[in-house]
Image (cartoon, rainbow, N blue to C red):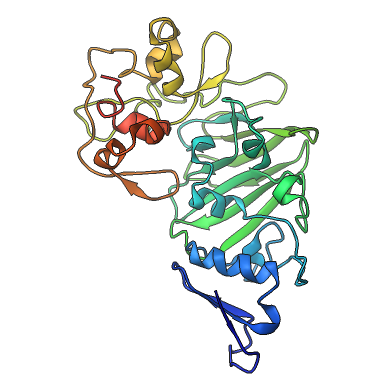
Length: 342
């Protein structure tokens, strides 16, 4: 952090930060403002700005939108869903859905639930909705508590952010939903209308929001009855999204709904007691390597694979710290030999 005299010409800006990098420069009058510090740290992390509509600095739920207080006290709030996903701080609680192939019926909690360790295995912090186009949607429950207790707007709502695949580009606030509200987008990846609906929203401790995500051309979910989570819409959707090559099949990288009780679990949960848990039909279908499907080959991928935050990793990287890195669902799926599944 380099503090410069106010006479230095910043071309009207309060500060600059390397993107990505480790150095940031501030005019003296703004150097003590947390909003300026966090904004430039965001650039250091590789983030672009957070906009709304046609305005580049306007997202009131993200430090990269410049909507907090410019005082020395500052405002306690964090990053939006797209940037939180890219940071990878909560990647063990990320969920991913492609509505053109399957749907999502799940529960989101705020980031503070991770710090307080009140989050459960069935809950998620960030949901990525993948499309076949140039941009994806990211969803979070913007719980107004803890480090986010002074978020300028849309506190305790489900906030949707649009982001291009180049995560360093400016993101766009898309919608903020309360209980019973929904967001729609027509012609979603050729699969009808995309629907994101908030079935319920609870703001107690820690607070949670149940949401549905589906494309009308594939499936229609209801808040009345619990729908199958990540439910299949083709003959075998659970294997195709995670297949790395045509000669092998792999465990799924996301959570799936157990047949017995509908609870959402990843394959690493099945692995811990696979003798009994593989008897569940959904577990056997979604986790073929873990459950010993003889048509599958239990072997690591040879190429690098993409993590939820967009970083490329390899099984050799995973082998350097298997105890920690194999906890990630993606690593667990792509590196079964390294992670001791074989």
